[in-house]
Length: 122
Image 1 (cartoon, rainbow, N blue to C red):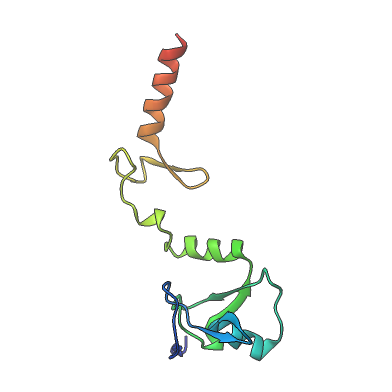
Image 2 (image 1 turned 45 degrees about the horizontal axis):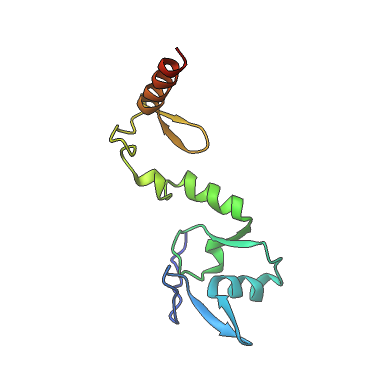
């Protein structure tokens, strides 16, 4: 992959390049995409292949949906929840103790929960 071209103007708190065009806030990477390829639908998201938020290198950008962007984030292990090593109860997220259903879940916690429910029903 070629080197990133970093936006040298203002950046958001999240690290994305931005500027004001005709009184509207515009992300720099989105503007670069539109200048190169034309207009975008409002729901289109410009994603970074390089994962560098202030990169405006057109070779590093691609169009997708927000769902595509979230899947890209998860596949690259960049999600906030993915960085956690233990569940809220302190059990480790290991291969043996983790199942995936709408995110990561702790098998030990599920086992405790199921046991409590079974005892309450008896």
